Image (cartoon, rainbow, N blue to C red; front, top):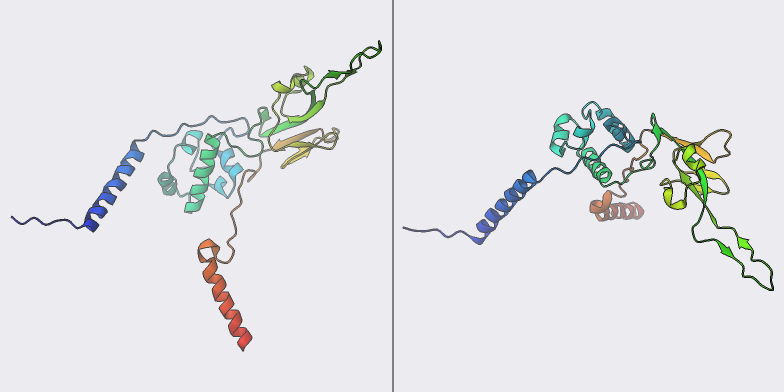
Length: 240
């Protein structure tokens, strides 16, 4: 009986196919990532799709609830009509960020009513900044007041009225105090009669959108080729 030896190329090809199918089998068995809980600023799937932009709000009917938003695979999204592929990749990318607790502006707000939240400036003393001058020649020591810090917070007025400590307050990401008492940040508008110390922020289309890059000279892969072709055309025109 004549036995035919397999060539090294055929063996490598067979091994590659085996590893590919093994990898797919492992992915199929892998447990699905956890579904995060909605937040006060992002309570449902339609709000999430509206916030991340790129026209994904038009697919609200295809992704009707929070469970499907974080459980549908790329293939299932394609079958539902979420096109093109870069849009699906963008949705999956934002979905993974949200799962890790990475939000856009307003994502960390706690007190939200109908998609709108109020932020205000509070001034609290910095712990350990109190000091006093020593007693010299019988003169009583002079107490130096503590250093104050201004924060932009999303707290209820009754909580602020109790004069909370600095450790008990959490500043709002993406907002800061400019000057004496003015809140600055994207997508906020001041409340009348507060001189800018109180502002509101409301859910809007595309607040978290990451703009697509613009290809220059055909992009990274074709940049050298496009620029060389342009240079040759310029040389031809100058010779004429």
